[in-house]
Image (cartoon, rainbow, N blue to C red; front, side, top):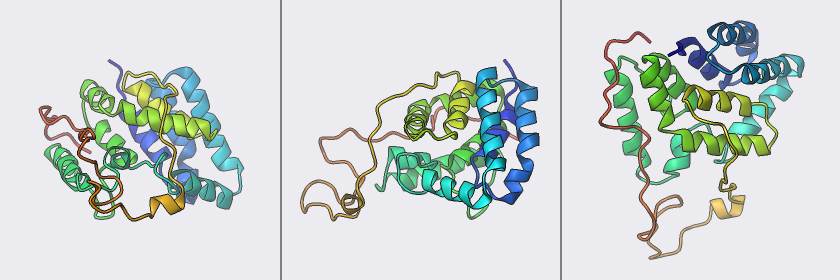
Length: 226
């Protein structure tokens, strides 16, 4: 199985805020992905196009597009538990489970880092053996395909990054149905009293309970350097 360590780290970096520091790193990031050759050639060409666009466009436009793409609405959020748990109480325990998974592998997050951000997830996967990283990312393929589909519909070049993650997970990047973001007035509406739902995003009694994306019976390898 091909090594994916540097590709995963490069993809994680490509998903970070495109400030001047990131734009200065784009050439070596793409070179690392090309050298490892774990991402299919056609997808690598798309990633090169994304990098070229981030350099070519005005920096303010690049940053504004990033915010509009990932920070304005849930459907393209890079915080994976947004797609699974929404605002429900289940998100807290899921976060704790994921942090514990990281810490068992020797990876500790900075205070400002949230464990369910796709960039952080990819950083963790890069510390694992290729087979384990592939299986770990494969568990969240349904979420990644929904994000990919939403980005594809918006004609965002960032769709190539999520597609590359899916392919490293041994999955096919494909368009799937996804729930569009609610209108702003609906998103902030108070829930109906006694409707079986305390806050937006929690399940009603007749709905299936959400699942965590972390497989609890899998123990990551210990002592792997971050």
